[in-house]
Image (cartoon, rainbow, N blue to C red; front, side, top):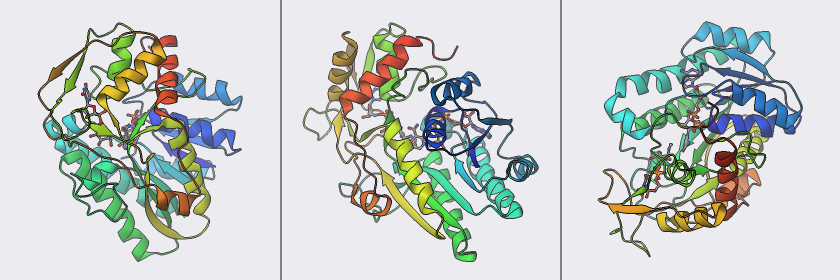
Length: 334
Ligand code: NAD
Ligand code: WQD
């Protein structure tokens, strides 16, 4: 039995599909602060298999201990937390509380119940502004905003815990830019309010919920002047989690990139989404967004070697699947 914190969220819901499809049993632990319980019904419809749901907050250690022991959990996938860079600058204390304190309580609950295997959602944001490309796992760690610092602190906490007790098995997964949706179109990303991230915004323009995309900067040192990122299909990401989980039968602690190794510009994404949707994406070029870097993409060899995993889906497939979800659910789960 795997406890999935944040399992109703965007990435967690896709990981649940991958886990259930691989024959694992799942307990989702979520407070639904940024998700909808309907996602859990959809996961079960896709997999034709039930999952267990516990509504709770990861800062509630006793609720976690109860969930871990009552359901006989052997491992945890930890997705629960807040993820907006912008909000983290405005509300740092909330981010340290939910992300750092939440992870700390989770680790204590795991220790108390004898569960010592965890897969953690980290982010390429821990590399800060890339000093070289592709970004290898050896790239210096240097978060540049409160959200990134919470991820870095949690990584350090996990590494320290492994040093203190090397019977723990810890996988730290550094995601690049997850996009796309399950191919059924039943689950996908459902941002509250105005999306910060590129692909959800583009999808809402395509469906007519927003008039035009603001392209943040066209004067970067990139082939077409717009920012270049490593977009990765959320189902490839989910498969990476399963591969990481499989390694946790052996105590160890590792941090590995989950990306494709390929960079795409904002204009590449617009073109791919236009092809996927058959709709024009109007856009306006605006000044750069503070804190953005020109280019970021992953080194993928370590993931291939360690996990035996590589992302396989193209940018076109990411946009096609994202569009299917958006078209079938114009207002998300609402
Ligand atoms: P999401 O907001 O869709 O999912 C997070 C889930 O956790 C939601 O269901 C939310 O209700 C739940 N949650 C939040 N705070 C909680 C708390 N205190 N207790 C219990 N549940 C709580 O986000 P996501 O995109 O699926 O991201 C999942 C994880 O991956 C996060 O830790 C995020 O930082 C990390 N990550 C995301 C991205 C990205 O671009 N989406 C990139 C890198 C890393
Ligand atoms: C991608 C590109 C923008 C929106 C963020 C977090 C990171 C991680 C993933 C969690 C950039 C451009 C965007 C828009 C645009 N999250 N853009 N118009 O900034 O690489 O990463 O999400 O861990 O920590 O920082 O992703 O999707 O916001 O931006 O032109 O409306 O699209 O400038 O070049 P980013 P993004």
